[in-house]
Image (spheres, rainbow, N blue to C red):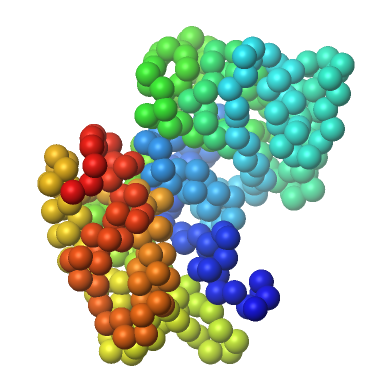
Amino acid sequence: MTTIDVHPMLRSKRPLIFTRPAERLGGDAKNAIEFGADSIWVNACGRFGKTYAVRQLTQTFSWRPFPMFMAEFTYTKPNKPTEGYFAGSLLLQADQVVSTSAMSNGSLMRAIRMLQEQGHRQGAEVIAVAFNEANRFTVEEYEHVMSMANECEKTGRIFFFFINQSDAGRLGRSGIDKRPPRHLFGRFFTTSHQFTGLLWDVPEHEKQFQLVSDVALAFREYDEELCTGDGVRVTFTQFFAPKAYAAGWRLGTQIDLIRKVINEVRSENGLGPVSEWPMQTFERFVYFVLVRLAFDNPDFEELTPATIREGLLRSGYLEIEPGYRGGMA
């Protein structure tokens, strides 16, 4: 079997599904850009899907208020957060050669010109730069970002996504004080978005246009939207569980049982009722159910409380839940 013949769920990188949390982030980012903000602070615990969501925004266009170019960078943790290190990190991630003897401001200008040129080629009015692990930033890094913003605003606009893992450190927003210096706070910290996992209940203010939960919509992606096949529309759920699918089974048809078992597991481990599902464990749970459970068993009919528990265990559900302590029951 060649790589092209392998089902997308069996590849080393499985397909992304677009989620309501990503749509909410896109909506807040759109509003921030339209209002003239320079950035949006994206905050959540680790593995909840915030970086996943930003990558979805780089691949979609409907949320963008203006023509945009988007770039994503991951920031490491240097011993000394110099301007040269900061600029070199951007250039290296863009496959650019970095001279060890280059002046730091020269490297930063190269990084800025690189982004401007890529934006110009795409006809962008706004350059958007997403920084993963912004929780590693110190005051010095934000000063470098300020230099980028000051240079770019001479000829256009630049907008930053600061992706912060709230449980990565002890100081809250980042490696700096909770209240950054006034000139940085006013520039970069006035607009924020509290990112969530897939919500189990529709927020009250969204009930007028969202009829089912985020979790139900995510299951529907596998049940109805993601398809494969040459000329024949075969959904992912149908492909991996053909017998059960023909009999009417879908991931979404057992959502109430899944939630019930999750709440039992949480209660047994000292956690309260579930409100959201981190994207990492949701996606791994779906993989386990479709590939390891249904696909390996031609007679698969539906999930049971025992197989749901096994799926939660295999996906590492409890290990990333805030407040969890100890082994899974």
